[in-house]
Image 1 (cartoon, rainbow, N blue to C red):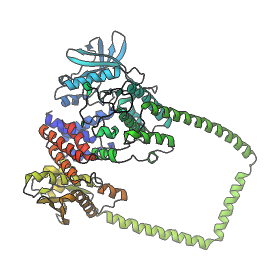
Image 2 (tube, rainbow, N blue to C red):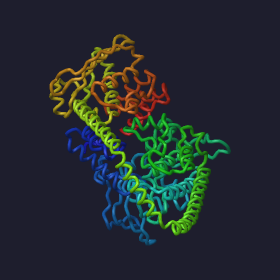
Image 3 (cartoon, rainbow, N blue to C red):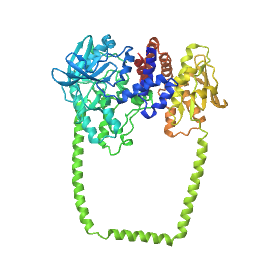
Amino acid sequence: MKRENWRKVKAIFDSAVEVAPDNRSAFLNDACADNGDLRREVETLLASSDEAESFMETPFAGEIAGLILDTPPNQLKNGQGFSHYKIVRQIGVGGMGEVYLAQDQKLDRQVAIKILNEKFSRHESNLERFIREAKAASALNHPNILVIHEIGENEAANYIVSEFIEGVTLREIIRESPMKLSEVLDIAIQIANALTTAHTAHIIHRDIKPENIMIRPDGFVKILDFGLAKLVEQKAVGFEASTVKQNQTAKGVILGTVNYMSPEQAKGERVDERTDIFSFGAVIYEMIAGRTPFAGDSMSETFANLINSEPPPLSRYASNVPDEMQRIIAKMLRKNKDERYQTMKGLLADLKDLRENLAFDERLEKSHSSDTENATKVLQATTGDANLQTAETNSSFARQIKQHKPLAAFTALIVLLTAIGFGVWYFTNFWANSTQIKSIAVMPFVNESGNAENEYLSDGMTETLISSLSQIPKLNVKARSSVFRYKGKDATAQTIGKELNVQAIVHGRVVQRGDDQLMLSLELVDAQTENVIWSEQYNRKQTDLVSLQSEIARDVSNKLRMKLSGADEQKLAKKYTENTEAYKLYLQGRFYLNKRTAKDIWKSIEYFGQAIAVDPNYALGYAGLADAHTLL
């Protein structure tokens, strides 16, 4: 596969993994359009990511790994010798290399061998991370941390040999069924024990997530993948631990997995052990709720929730969660790291106390239940006529109904009229809903300013409207990749409607007048009849650009005749920033990122960085940075 095609596959895959599995098919319909080959490649990656066993990293499909590297994977054959090991089979392929189950012929034991891909080995930074992963894990002698046996080089291939873990990832357990609180606490305490040891050795993991936690059949936990691990200097007091010079991460570089990042990690700031505490809190939350605490419908929304919003209460997703458990998780997920647990040791103590208290309450409840059962038996022995009394009560109730026939008839009439009223309301709403527009395509807005430098504005306003309308439930909004292929083309509404299978089309024209004035003309067109359903012209100052985007999203949704709840309206009106300058810088970043060339991607990073500098809480700016670094 050509590098350009692979980049398309990777970009769509990176977005698809953030979409709930039930919604992925619709997402791929839009993102891949009619390109069946593209969709098959993405689905192969998704299937492998969801189903394959994990070891040190989330695996990719074997045949796709070579495409990542632009070279075929260095697969070893079953039965082949490798140093003093005999290859049994391949068990996974990650972004950095292949992983094999092998037999150690010297010590007669099964091991896992992770081999760094040849092309990755050529880059010093990749090799350093590979070696750092081995050193970080091998320095931690703890039963809940993967044991590293050896690191070496064989025929120019760098490799790590570790113990082989038979079991499943925590991700698979979460996916299967809701977890009992006792299971959650048992796993959490084992993880906390392991991380306490790591932090005592001044090593932070930085990528705690369900895929990096394996559970053996006996319930024993193993933490994997110290590939992002970072050494921090020991300080006498405080947590201003600076990075060891040889292992310094550039400020602004975002490492980790979005759903489990701490706010400081998402912002590319320096981190300490409290970032692991936050990520760990997200994992415990997901074990109980079945979903991550800051999950959004897109990566951008997830970033925004992470930085600006509090997680939904656990009671929304699970019942009977003890108040103390909720308090512990809430403290772990504080956005201000000074308000979190300051050490893993303190967290571990609270988790153990909670488990002991719950065990005591359970024993007390069993004792109370036993006493109650004995008392009930005595009571039943003295009330043998209870069933007879019940029957007499029922007979009495029937006699009362016969004595009040007129009242019963009137009541029946009221019920009948209510049913008729409900029927009229239902069918009225049914016919009203049948006129709703349930599918729409927002065409690229035309830049009529006569200045090509303003192209970012027309493109960006289009993308923002697409994103806003996508928040409306049951409305099918075509993705950017589907509509931007019509940019600059003269296609009729009927043609677009048939090709994209939508009911309506939005057209827009943007004119910038001077340095301060902006005019936007919008039309909503019926894709079948080509009649204009609605049109509007907006004249605003550029300083009102953020408010204008919210206004046009609200106006268009109203003309679609969609019934929105209060929560839906809030989502539609949501502003990720109030700062127009930050918003325009973000749009410029997206404009260059969409060009997909290395030069333009670096330019987009500059703009995203400037947007964040103007508004440090601008979640979309951080999301843009993450997207850009993914494509490099």
